[in-house]
Length: 460
Ligand SMILES: Cc1cc2nc3c(=O)[nH]c(=O)nc-3n(C[C@H](O)[C@H](O)[C@H](O)COP(=O)(O)OP(=O)(O)OC[C@H]3O[C@@H](n4cnc5c(N)ncnc54)[C@H](O)[C@@H]3O)c2cc1C
Image 1: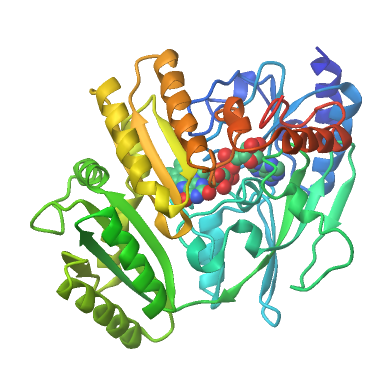
Image 2 (image 1 turned 90 degrees about the vertical axis):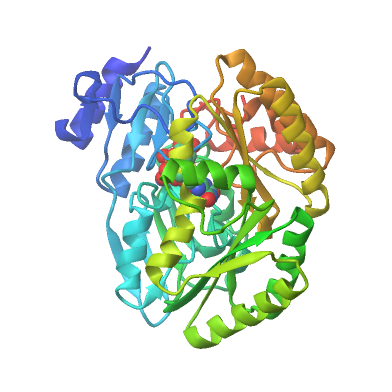
């Protein structure tokens, strides 16, 4: 193990205060939200500048010292969890918002900037980064790019990839590749940023990002709809897309999920009766009365034709938040259902109802004492299944095998937005061909021949 000499050189480079060792760790820097295995790292590096990140990587490459890269540790695939022999490189201290270009509508920030902090900073200046997810209070924009995060507004604005104009990346050989493009159109050769977005820290460490902004939409209209069936929800999706051009979110929740969410929130249901499924819709724009009227008209018509059985339209930001709380109770439910599996799959919409019914029956009959909660970003064909708590690893593995086999059978993806990491590595071949896997490995071997960065994540 090369760690002793490497550690000394890293201390000289970064300073003692930026190199934590096992005695000073206090439980931080060990694990993300996945529940995947981790080892206590011998050292945690907290570089303060991009050149320091690159120089630290150069030392680690020379000394053959492997590293686990950490952002905000909200990942659900275990990629940031240190393995035996690895040091941790955390982006926590690279957290400056550097430049806001109000003429061009772009911002440059360091990778460790917290997503929620950036949203607040931009909002106070009339700008908006469309990416939004339940983990906004802890995740970092570097981690969002490394995982190509999705979230609640993909339907309208796309995934993180669609907001990234440029990146700066420290490569495993110590090169600092500065590609902080700030223009939308740039076809000057290969667009290398896309190689790193979604690569989960296997090809480079993202140190800075240039992000595309939109003017702050200062009005929002939020409604929770109760529906008799999944088919009715797809009908609502079609209508909402047609009649609400400002539609930004379309979140589907099955009854079991809503009941569990209300129970964990200790809240009564906003409806008198229970319904098969619920959809949270939100429009973002500038003219609140017009948006409100548009949603009311859309829903009135659907209530008349019994597509929608009941609906609550938020009359204030507090009411909107309390409706979103139901959708975002997923984080509390994860804490309650440990050890859980948080499936994050995508499937063609025409297959989704059959898939949910089959998985629900299969899991209820094999694991009747566990909870199996279905919800998702329906507008993106993205389904989440939160299931747990499981007694042992054998049961967790059995459930993964069955669900991923069913995903493959309907032509879906085993990871819609949260990545592969360690959690889904064994199942990657169900969504990628041998040729695709071979090219992924060839890229890794070219950029990181010693496998210093996030070794064994995504693929071996
Ligand atoms: C309650 C909750 C809700 C969530 N909702 C969503 C959702 O709606 N949509 C969604 O997509 N995800 C969601 N997630 C998952 C998670 O928040 C995202 O994957 C997020 O983008 C991870 O960011 P992070 O900074 O926490 O990264 P981490 O968890 O620290 O790391 C994730 C991966 O990226 C790598 N990495 C981190 N930073 C860098 C960097 N600077 N350079 C290179 N590699 C890096 C790590 O090594 C690891 O492999 C949710 C998670 C929770 C707990």
